[in-house]
Image (cartoon, rainbow, N blue to C red; front, side, top):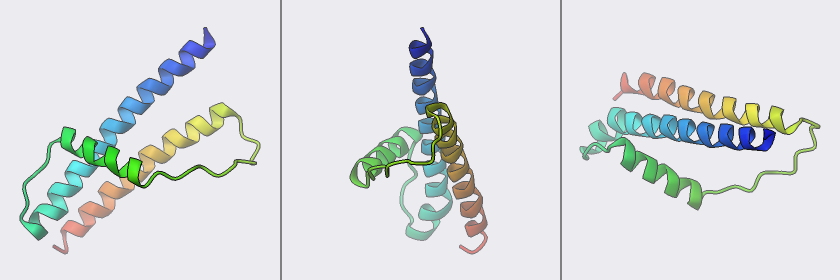
Length: 100
């Protein structure tokens, strides 16, 4: 039963971080690429597709982790990283809009 709970949590987190990533990409596209290149806006679905292709093309094999962290600690760390990287991208993208 515990394995089912972990699997369900993993799926939910993957969906939520995918939505956050798509939102981040579509927002940065709107803030930066449209004013600079005069291109069309993209939807969150298109942003998700672009992010999916990017992650496939630039996939990096994780290094062997010898930190001694449990699987739960690694999972939480990865969730936090996914959230923080998107927040920082939005923050710095917003700041960049003042210089465009």
